[in-house]
Length: 309
Image (tube, rainbow, N blue to C red):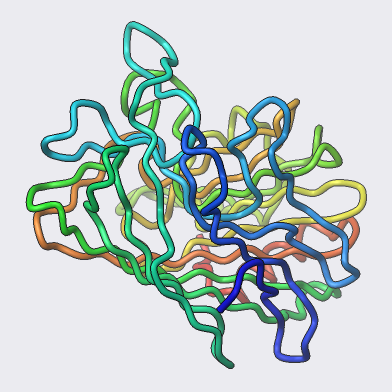
């Protein structure tokens, strides 16, 4: 197939445009992404190359710190500089790429074959990624749902460790995973979240209330089955599939200055993948027009497969 390519719902409406990222600067860690990402009315809820972080591109999978045997530095598949404990962010010669080596489009969506490569061009992981688009009716609103199902297989010959700046020592910077950079219209957006489930075996007492507004401080790094943002003109909701490793996932979210939402499974600690091992992931992004009610987010999340707390 030829890129850019539309990703459409069953009735032919475009949920967004897929790009292979191959023409992006090497220091930005080229990778496939979707931009724009649109609501049912066609409103875009993604940003591309914002001035503050020109390596932020719409919706995709991006990881900042990947430890690979025989590589001097962690491989950066996020773009830009890499956080080093004691030194801050440093531009290193470690920006790799997720290269699309094969793709096909069919009724079930767009399937991509990817090679994850270090800066020296060596492949250390192969991925099969499938993008699909559909619609969800929930909470009195129509949502466009974009889902990614991904299988990662370690081909490096040694172990891999997936991390984040927080795992490397920087507080509250655990980004990396399924990532959406939002436009300036989401600056100051409300963060909507489900209640946090009590630890297993703990007396729950009063049952948790439904979804509601939380602060950025409360949401950052918290583990929940979903997280959402509500602006004046659109609402977005991200859900991690129940089979995703480490679910419920930690979240990285900002709404001031640099609005972004990221299901961040490596926020607090590294995840290791042994030699020749494989793992599978699943995430969905749901977008609706306008300011939907708190309860609508919970209903849409359940329709997308999220588990009640």
